[in-house]
Each structure stands twice: as structure tokens, then as C-alpha cells.
Length: 532
Image (cartoon, rainbow, N blue to C red):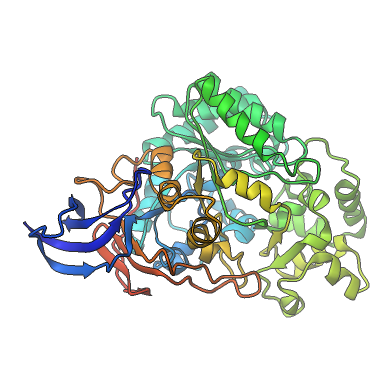
């Protein structure tokens, strides 16, 4: 048999969790044709790679990505592909880039999301999910991508950012937009119930929109309403929706935050098992760090963001309004609001991705220290930074503990995701999440076997997101492959130097085409927008 590509003399980790074996993988026309053990396989190919004992496995699937707009500026997405990622799941936390038909408010939407998704340095030329996916294909990208349709997006389209309950007709209009997105190829529905405008949604609203998934069997992906003080109630809300609607559930960036919940990861995982015993299909994803990251505006009380960007700037510039913001955060005056600043502490929140002349030299420093040195207050620093950066800033919150990360990491229900925001000083997870698992939790600490780790990066997210042709090395499936040296692979990105690529990821293939060869970007752009 003549092949396009042959990877031989490899340790094959097929993605199922089964023990590795020595063999070869053959590819033709972007599809795996042969997976064999025989050293004298008799196969020949246009391109043959001697893996020399390195691992070959399915391409990694980033279960939680924020590359929605970055892929237009950087189609190579090297921070992701060079850690072995061949497929990205976009539209997370309720923030998809479509469907949006409110042309007069697109700029305000971009301003609000700039700290999360960056800014689009080109014309916004799409409205529907179908048109957005077409634009991705036209851009020519290295990895494959798929998108969820976002709750916040459809709520913004119908209701704007306001704290209002939709009428029956408005709720049905939102549901119709979700259905449209699913028909256009979105692989599921997402929400982010700590973010404006979803934070204003009732359980009934969330359940009604999630009901649009029922005919498709596609997943409901959620940043649940709380990961700290009210996490148990938030989990119950989400799981009950899954039980009521009979739909798959996937929990984003599974973790515990806030002092009163740290150390309870066993209880968290038990809730997942109880849900599965009820017949609810629940999975989750996790980043392998003790710090999270989000847009800096997420520290503000929801009411601050209930209008357009100009109104937010007016509030931030008003001393009286700042005092109200301070009391809401420091005195926990808003019941049910996640309040990241209040639960984490200003000395554990670093401001990042700063470009203004006033604050660029403060990038990566914590808010408490900046406030002390400026003879200011944390709230004033927060507001001043957001104004100086035109709302386009991010933050890193050091709110987790390693023992919880390890406990959750050990679950075979939990996939790996980067949850990475791009920018001038990103969280190191943008560049290092997948090799960090392989280096730290497999090779150094033996928390996971090599096969278990690969399964969490491949077949588990593939099944959770409904990808039947990805995640496993089997003849007939997509030829998304990673070749890495398990004795060498190491993440090099740190909080001080976050834009450092890993080592030990030798080759990466998307549909049989090399996008990384010998650890370097090849310039090939074979990726496509996946439509469900």
C-alpha cells in the first residue's frame, strides 16, 4: 500500500486509554489508513517519519478556547498548535461571535469582549454562524475549529446588556437564534452565568434555550453561576437542566474558588458521579494551573456593564459610582454574584495585557501593590486601568490550590483545556497547558499514566463535543496526529515569561498535513471550520 504519510517506529497511544504499543500509522488523503504493529510492515509513503520511539497519538483537542477572533490575526495559532492542539472549541462562556444581526451595536459588543477575545483588526463581515464559519475557512487556518452558539450573544441580540426578564416572545426569539446557530453548524450551546448579560438570566430562561439542543443531542457547555460561595447550588441548577432536558452537559474550567470551598474537590467530583448515576451525561474540562484568567471587567458588579461601553466609562470615571462599586465588592452586597475580587483578594489579582502609556509598566503586577505604590485604592486602580486601556485589559487571579487541581486532574471525566486569552502578557496556559500535563502530572508526579493523560486530551473531549471522526487512532478517522517525546516534553511558559513555546512536541499534523515539523511552524494552513 502506498501512502501519503507514514509515521513508523513509534509508541502508539491510540487515545482510548489502552496501553501503548510499538507500530506505525499510515495516512492517505487526510485519513488514517493503517495502524499496525508489524516492524516489517511493508508500507511505503511519499513522506516517512521515523519516530525513533517517540509517542504518536491523536491530535489534542482544546476543550475550551478563546481564539474566536485571534485566528483572523494569526491563522497559524502557533501558541496552540506547537503544544499539539489540532482542534479548538470556540464560543465559550456564552460569548460566540455569531449570530449577531444588530449591526449598530457590533462595535459595543467588541469593546465589551475585548479583554476576553481581543479586537478584530478588520471589518466584521458576518452575521450568522454559517457566515462566521465561512469567514474562518476563507482566512485559512492551521488547526481545525468548531464553535458553540453563545447564550450571551443571543441575549445581547434580543435584549442588549440590560437587567431585564424577557417576555415570552423575546425568549422565543432568543431560542430561535440558538436553533439557527445549531442548524448552521454550531456543535452545541454555551453559557457563562457569571458574565453580563447572562448573569441576569433565570433558570427557566437557561433551560428554555438549552432545550433547543434536544433534537440534536449536542452538548450544553457552561461556566456555571458560581465556582465559589454558591457552587453547590450552581451545580444543582446545571445538572437539573440536563436531567430535565435529557441533554449532554459539559462544565467549563472545573474548579473550586474562594476560601470556604478550597479542599473540597472530592465532593465536587462526587456530584458529577451522582449526576451520572441519575442518567445525566456530565463531563468537564480543566486547565492545569492554580490561577485563572479573564477580562478585567469581570471584576465589576454586573450593573456597571448593563449598558454600552460609553456608559461603563462614565460610571468608572465618577467618584460616587466608584464608591458604590467598592461597597458592592468589598461588602458583598449583591447576593448571588460571583464577585471574583471579593473572594480572591486584590493582592492575588494581577493585571495583564496592558498597552497604555500610563499602565504598561505595571503589567503583571497585583492590584494591591499597584494601589499601595500609587497611594491609591484597589478600586481606583481597577477603574483607572480600565479607563486607560479603553476596557481592553485582562487579569490573572491566583485563587486555586494545588491539591484541588490534582484531585480534579485525576478524574477520567475531566478533559484538558487552555481557557487561554491572547495578548501582550497572557496566562502561561495559552502556551503550555497540554505539555504541562504531560511533563508535570505524568512524567514527574505519576498522577496520571501516559495513556490516561492522552485520553483526557483526545477521545474524551472528542466524545463530549460529538466528534465521531476524531480523538482515536483508527483506520477511517481523521489524520490529526501529534508526535512527542515523553521523556523531553516540557512546558516553558511561566507567569513572568508566558510567551514561551514548549519543547518535545516534535510534529503535528492536521488532516495528514504537517503544521509543525521538528518543533517549528511549517506555514501550512489545512484547518477547517467544523460544522456539526
